[in-house]
Image (tube, rainbow, N blue to C red):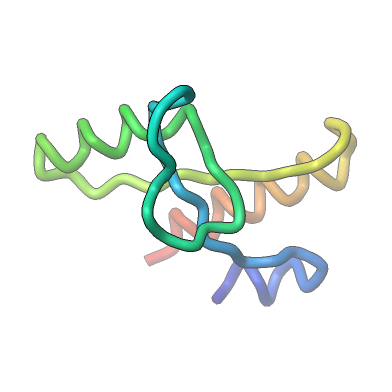
Length: 79
């Protein structure tokens, strides 16, 4: 919620995290697929740790994209 308030142009979406590039697709309706976070999320679950991923999507690494990444990191750090 804080991320959406801080970046009104951003859009919240469900992202499926999987490490299966070639294989069955996840059986749910996700807007996008992420191939990098699955191992981190699985390790956190196995160790009983809370983990989160930040996915910032943009067509170039400009200042606005970097700003959204900083906002997302701050939002996740706030408890």
